[in-house]
Image (cartoon, rainbow, N blue to C red; front, side, top):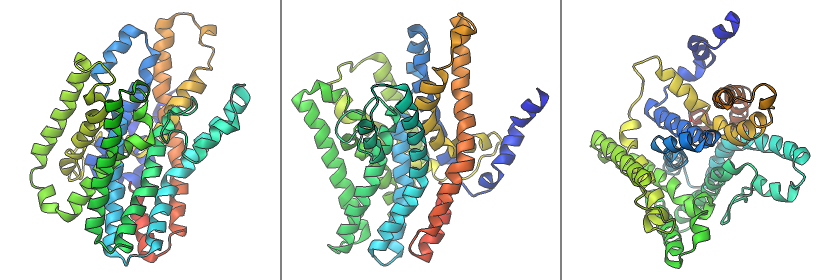
Length: 399
């Protein structure tokens, strides 16, 4: 037993991630990623508990996925802007961008998806390959609800379609229509924000209740959240003095928006799903709030405390945590344990279930990150098309 507890000491965990912790990471962004993944896992784990307990979760749950979207847009958008500004425009730049992006995200996603496909093929008589094949092409939720398998993958579809289409639009404006990269990014950003806002307003105008209840998990209606992050990268790169001018004020403003949104949710001011706020403004405000946190957090380089290493580690494994926690761990592994064979006392079952939900998510994610995610991500250095891109690929390992 002593050996077991020795292996899970924080110092041992820190040694396991010593290489990553030695990198010059931006700790402020690790904090944001840590907050996003923990609030997602708390939100998805709340349904384990009875309704009376579940009701308290509304006070601590935030929209972690939208935070992830904005952070992703900020990081990847910054890389795209630098590639366009520092290289001769050619299609290989775009290919390099996609290769680096896909080696970071696709191998782990396809691994978990394939594991789930094999499981459901044997466990669910209603399951068919015709349903699951959409997931392999990120078509499970383009403009319709995600089917009942691997539902959390909806956000991966939003990201992959964004990074397939938006950089292409920017590249076309720059390479074909000869706009400067700065102008191309701005035109594309404004067009996407206007178009998505118009589509959501159309749901409100038509009083389409069915779509109002499901649009938030559909690709077509959520691309704007990532674009807010790209706008952050745009401001950081082209207007760095402005970006760094009032970070603390913006941090306070961003936190205030989150708290106001939490008050609106808890108080039930806008209970109607067809309310203008719920359809048009809610996700935009969350995105804006996250965006204006970034000037402060993106310049917070290091933690003064050793516990900050734990925040960074959770940040590093956050993608694996997101892919494994809900369907694989909670929905398959834990729900298939015959709990009542051990005890019928739910005061024991529920806490143990919830503890294992977190523990298995973290343990599985560490293993997945160390033995699969990192090795497959590193492969991208072999497939880029230029030396400059190979150098950028090495830098991307910090994301």
